[in-house]
Length: 173
Image 1 (tube, rainbow, N blue to C red):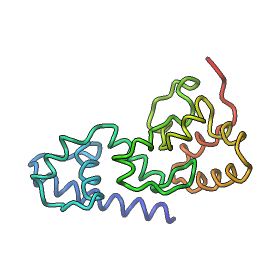
Image 2 (image 1 turned 180 degrees about the horizontal axis):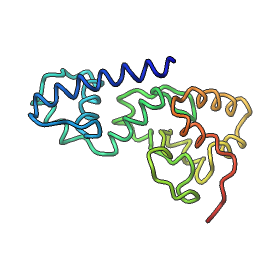
Image 3 (image 1 turned 60 degrees about the horizontal axis):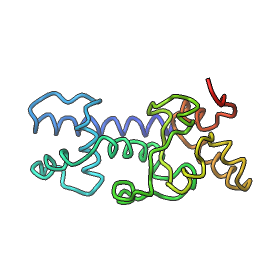
């Protein structure tokens, strides 16, 4: 019920943002339009919602990978799924230590979808390499694995939870 309520609030906010953007750009803004995500990121950075000259310049600077990182950051509630450390917005955007990584290794799954991606510290990603999360945590202390599973249990997306907790993945096709 809490997840449903949270999603309704998010949708209401996005509707308000769409209305503001439609008035400014004088065009229909779809929910999938990247300008909507850029506006959410703009506001998250503490910028003024009605300073459209700066916003216009900002939209030209933001890369697609920044938007994907931002969406993954929100999905993970601003916390690294692997370490449990809080990821600040400034670290997310400006720090090369935070990477987008494939939950199930691309080399083994050939899955490059958003559903198979998350955020990860570069140091952890370099050790995880071609392992699934559970294979990685099998090589770590039991408490780290247990903490990881608790963090994943809080994910609102059941499909992504199942990807994180995949136990058996063939080494090749």
